[in-house]
Length: 291
Image (cartoon, rainbow, N blue to C red; front, top):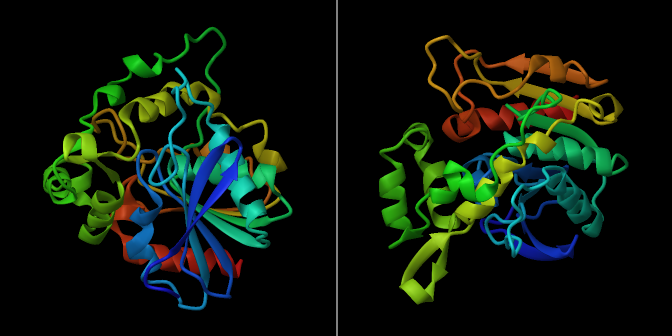
């Protein structure tokens, strides 16, 4: 496996998608990041994987090296991410692929498997976001411009400045240092107009993703997933947990809808365990490939 991946830009679905490819002629493994992150956040995990595996990671649209839509929609349609992954896998001519997805990346992996069942044979879903359909009559979420994420600080003097600030904030302060450094390096893009850097995932686009969460339910389609699915959930929410991510984002009742599924819970792990416990992920991938 190469130390630095080859980056391929694939034009599909009216956008460019960056796929980072570490080479190898073994099993095909595609890694999919969570909302707001980037493909290279997987670097500490990739470093643990066997050299002969064919390991890739995709920058979802609006993340990393994949440009955000312009203009940004008031509410992003979540299945678009899965359609993009399927298009990239098809463009690369890959077969018998294991797609590994964390959080929203897990949702996107499932949507991709529904789009390309003949190419995606296995899924490893790391605390995937599997939302319920909103009850009838529920008002839609606030549009992107009104979401808190739209007000996120976008400009930074340097990746080092970005890292130093994140290191003191939850949930980033609990991340493995290598994962946080990988995000700080790949989560920013140079901006000559300010002689500094901007977030690669623009805050308004990230806000658009959150605003589109009422399109996220896959419940009607989960029984049609043909891939073998391994789910690894984080700890359950406790009464004294503050609102927001931390405990598991995965609904057990959604997991039970997959025809072929293995469900496991890491009882002490947070939603961000792939970034906090990077050494654990290799074993989970090996188990998924062996099934």
